[in-house]
Amino acid sequence: MKKIKMVSIMALTGLMIFAAGCSQAKTDKTVKKVSPKVKNTVDASGTIASSNVENIVIDSSSMQSITKVSKMDVKEGQIVKKNDTLVEMDGYNSNKSEDYISGQNIISDMDNAVVTDIGYEKGDILSAQKSVLKLQDLNSLYVKAKVGEEFIKDVQVGKDVTIVPTSDSSVKLKGKVTRIGNEVLSSTSSTGMQTSSSGEANIPVDISIDNNNGKLFPNYNVDVEIQK
Image: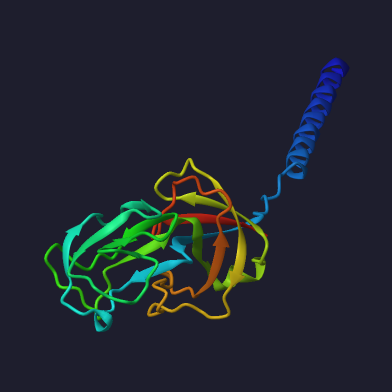
């Protein structure tokens, strides 16, 4: 009888030790719970723009005869270098001097630019009321970003930025915050940036591009990670 009683006591003691061990393990697991990692960047989106855009116009008031386009030497989106011929004219005769005029030709006066907004075709008569085309300087590109108003407190001028082109997410370029706007962008803002689908207001932020390797062009979309 005593033997049975002794076995029962030992079994009960074992159960108590096992229960205590399980409780301790549960406590240890609770203690080791990892806190969520705090994000040290502000994520936003933006578009590429050039700070040096030249709108080429032929001033018809200074011309002594009707001037026509005899040949368009470039296409929309074409990259041009300094002195490349853009447009050949017929009948151009003016005493007005322009850096983008060479004889009867319109030429590029930028070292590295992209052609946009072509306004004429072969045979068209040139007029001062309509620009011939625009040159956007590829050496003066920057990011026009939009940051949610609730996050703008974490953005400062001079902070490092990682720029990721939407066209190639494997590319990571570097830049810095150069300007933080004081205005709130609305859905009708003249900058073309809109509020998010949730109705969140955005603040404009300009970002320099330190090492553009030919992956970015005007109006390209990018994602940015701004260091807090």
